[in-house]
Image (cartoon, rainbow, N blue to C red):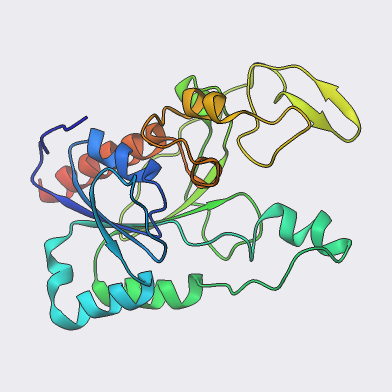
Length: 235
């Protein structure tokens, strides 16, 4: 699985979970260091178990942050995801969730580095600078994700037409479709094997890690776009 970095640049992958985002940057040619508060033995690159915000603050204080060219962030989404602020909230389900993005953005601004903040579609306080969909890459999941891009930018690709439904039960109706639902369980949701295939993630078989992951194709595209933007700035 090892691919030698081609560009000599390093990405800091905060809230890294199992490494879906990391693998995409890796395939774009970056060296990746992951940070997560939970032990992630299947993370395929250098891993640090730590609170992501505390780790970032330490890197800023010591000056070690200067080794990185880009910071990718996938903070917990429960405080702003569609289910939490929609159906679940209206029915009194679930618990209170702390929104980490404002504090995170303050630290990111202090680094002076380009960054990416990834979130599902919902009401998280992020700019919608970029939106990607699995269909853009021919994947078996849609997995719509919003990305805030700090200190760099790229062109939004056109949103492709979906080929059909996401398989499963929705609003009391079961439908077949070319995509699987890589979250939850029951009602036609994807099996672990189906999620791995649909997202291109073969190094973990832990359901929780797969349901939290984004497909590596997303960040391979982002990493390549960042390199293009960086080259244009240098020229």
